[in-house]
Length: 173
Image (cartoon, rainbow, N blue to C red; front, side):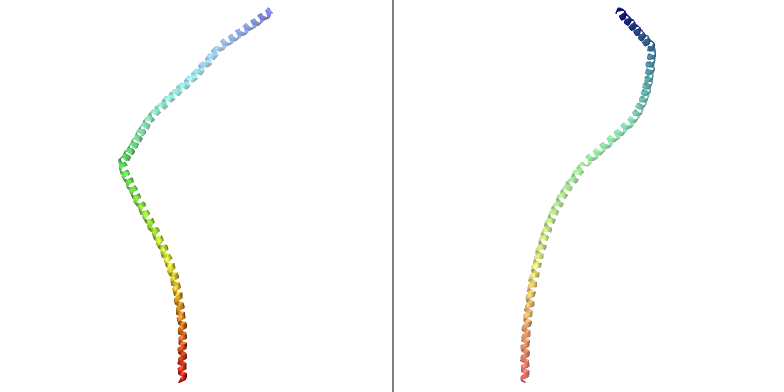
């Protein structure tokens, strides 16, 4: 068994030596690959830094314009606020007058509505009165017509009597 363990130990030593040899022989290749990758990364970094610097310069130029526009906008808002403050008292006076005018208009509207309601009641009363007068007049006219007819009948009777008397008188002669 000792021989077997020795054989395994010798094989293990050769395997370890082979691995170390492979590691040492490929170490330079791996270092070169890492170096190439580092150079590519450095080139990308340098390109990015250059582009970032160019972009910063563009932003600095644009930032001046943006700042100028920002200042102009602030000035415009300040001018608007000054205008509002300048005319705030005038607006208050105008609003007060509009409110008082609104009160007058409301009062006039209420007065007109009251007068319209009164006129409607008067018209209704007049319509009732006219209707009652029409009925009364119709009744009176009918009564007068009946009275006239009655008088005409009486006149006819009187005329007949008078004619009979005349004929009698004529017949006597």
